[in-house]
Amino acid sequence: NNGSPQGIPTFGAPILFDFQGLGIRGMECNTNGCVIIAGAIDDTEEFALYTWSGRPEDAPILRNVDIEGLHPESVILNANDSLQSGTTVQLVSDSDQIDWYRAGRRGDRLAMNLRLFRSNIITLD
Image (tube, rainbow, N blue to C red):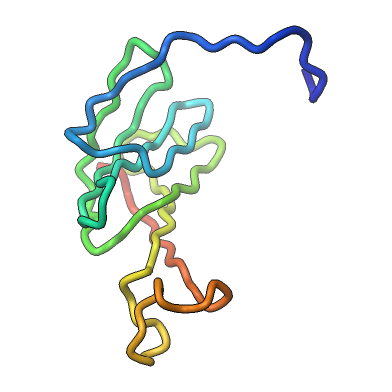
């Protein structure tokens, strides 16, 4: 309602996904569905990328993409991306483990204004 809600908001039933022990780290949707980044809830480097139709009755689909060495936390999705094989999406990765300035300090040990992220374009299988 353009910032003027009427009445009390209500929520539908929760939607549960099986990401094999991983949790949602990032999700971006457009009119064609959603891209979901799943990752470990601890410091292990386990990540997976899923696409989902956005319909509660549909399960997310695990995509076979090479994200080894990345720590994806967010996805940038264009408004008209189809989410079909061959579509490219942009992942934004945490770079806490990288010594960006070659000063013997990982990114997570730097002052906030010196921390960096990296971006990678990947193609959906």
